Length: 360
Image (cartoon, rainbow, N blue to C red; front, side, top):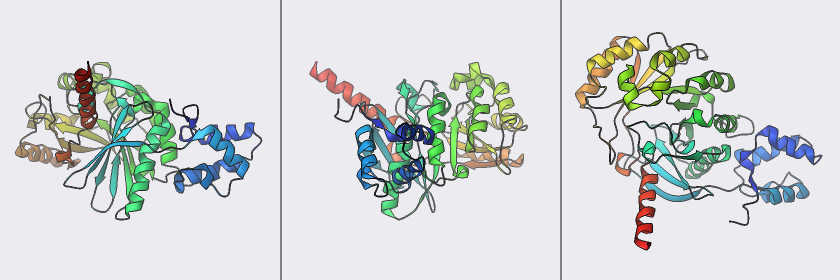
């Protein structure tokens, strides 16, 4: 137990919650804006840095809250400049966050849970099981901390956020929505445009209407098959929310003008990469304003699946393009550093288990 363990991470408080805390102490509500600006816009680490906030309030903030940065347990950089962070949380758990260089900007892939309960067969994170949800502050901290680092480097801006790391975002709904409100707050938060933030889900259908109501970030669906038999074998969630239910929910999902739902389709050799699969996919998505990302499977230790033949990938893309879909092939970055989500955490867990075995 640390000396600060009785304190609350201030990043776990929404604007309303911080406002209520101030109101209970008869402190004017405009202080919320100042405090948020110091934490998120100015990236202040200590409450003593908040020079336009009175000394008495600074002392009370310091006595009640923490504003720590995540511990970096391990960091590795790939040949393509992809950086993978293994962050250590206060309770000793680990999460992964990946910084991906694009042509003129960075994209950050953020985790929302420690582990994942969805059990997708192709996913490295699933092998470690589910431990717990991340707090809003732990989700925000990944973005805040890496943004601070990137700003210090000064080479390219961090402009895009994808909630595609460890965990199912919609299974941690309230904390994810609260975190997104800070990440996309253009006045007092981290100032990311909702057009440049994407939430990826395996398809928790009951939460899709809530998501459309509560935020305007982009929606991505991890689809990976165009028939229920194959998708249920790859993704157990499909047994509860089969394709017809999922597509019906996507059809009515509220989309701003000119936006589409992204459907992510991991191509796995001899599982879902045949021409007939492409034709079924084109037919399935016809009722939806859709674009498609094809992702050749990124092999990892212990997987039974294989990467598809490049010719199959090209053929799959051509079939979809001929049916007037916007379709991109997304080649995984950071393959030389094990950038599949869950891999660094698994390595750390195995190292701990080996050490415990040696000591017993």
